[in-house]
Image (cartoon, rainbow, N blue to C red; front, side, top):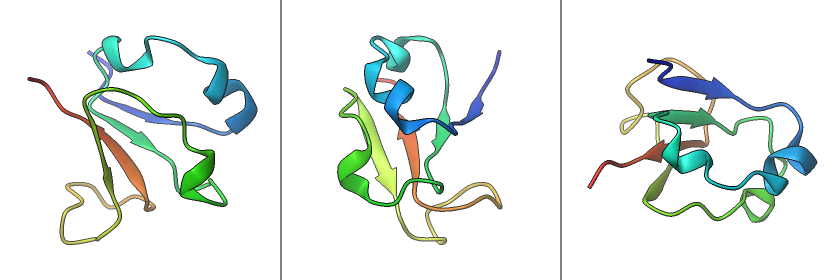
Length: 67
């Protein structure tokens, strides 16, 4: 299972639908200039603090929560 995704093209990412249903746990959004450019996904949490981050990657990062 793929757990982590790094996105490079924010225009294309904003067009995606159902990304939160693909089984990813985290989406690295550190390349995004502003949080406003991050698409709104359901069941997500934006990690902006290194104390919350389980991996040594860039921040911010989107965590897909499983409910």
